Image (cartoon, rainbow, N blue to C red; front, side):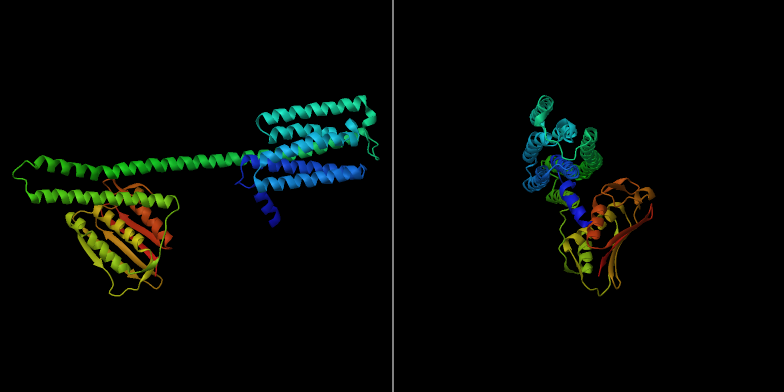
Length: 425
C-alpha cells in the first residue's frame, strides 16, 4: 500500500505541472491499452511475434515514462511515444492481427484522442492529421489487398474481435478521461483555495496599509508641527534654547515612536513569511521587566500614571530569546500607557514549578466585549476611544506561542485591562 501511495505521489502529486500530469496519465492509459492487447494476443493465439512485440511496447512505454520524469522532458517523450506507438506500432499490428476484422481498429479511435490530449499547438494538428491519413491508408490496404492481412490462429468470430478491440480502447480512454476529470476537479479546488488565499492576502495588505498610515500619521504630524513652530519662532527674541530643546525632545520622542512602528512592521513581515528566528539563551525575566519599566517611566509620568512593580526577590533564569521577550513586554507597556490616564499600571511577575508568568495590569479605559474576542488578531481597534492597538498584541501572541508559552487577556470597559503571558521555567 505504501508503494502505491509513493508511486501516486511521484507521478500524480500536487507538485507536478499539468504537462507532467497529462503525460503520466497518457503513459498509464497507453500501458493499460498495451496490457489489454497483450492479454488478447495470448488468449486469441496471436503468435509469438505479436506477443513479444506487445511486451516490448509495454517496456518501452514504462521506460519512457520513467525517463521523462527523471529529465522533465515531457513534451519530447510525448512525441516519441506518439510516433512509436500510434504511427508505427498500431499500423504494424493492424496488418498482423487481422486488419479491420481484428482488435486494432478500436484503438484507432484511442490514438487521435490521446494525441490531442498530450500534445500542444501545431504538433497536435500535424500528428492527428498524420494518424488519420495512415489509418485510412491501412483500411484501404485491407480492403484492396486483403492477402496482406495476417489473422490470428484462433480467430473464429470477426464481430467478437472488433467488439473486444473497441471495448479495450474504451477502457483505455476511460482511464484517460477519468484522470483528466480528477485533475480538473483538483485544479478547480486549488484555484478556489488560491482565490481565498489571494483575498486573504489582499485584505491583509489593505489592513497593513491602513494600519501603517493610521499609526504614522500622528507622529509625523507632531514632528512637522514642532519643526514648523521652531522655524517660525527662531526670529522671536523670547524663544530660548530651552524651548528649542523641548521641541527637539518631542521630535526625538516621536521619531522613537516611528521607529517602534517600523520595527512592528518588520516583525509582522517576518511572522507572516515564516522567517521569524528565535535564539534561546538563559535570561532573567525580572531584569527584563525592570529595564522595560525604566524605559517607559517617562511615558507613564506624562500620562499621570503610577507604575508599580511586584517582582519576587529571587527568580531563576529561563531559556528564551531576550530581544523578543523584551519586545513583548514593551508592547504590553505601550498599550497600557496609551489607554491609561491618571491611573495605575502594575507589572507583576510570579513563578510556579513549570512556568514563569509576567502580567501588566492597568486601570485604564478597558476593552469593549466585542473587541476583546478578537484582540490577538493582526489589526484591531482597542478601548472605548477606538484607538488602534496596532500589531502589538498580535505580535506578542506569535512570539509567546513560538516559545511554547501562552498569553491571555482580561478586560472590562471602563475598569482596565490585565494581560499576562506564561513561559516555560
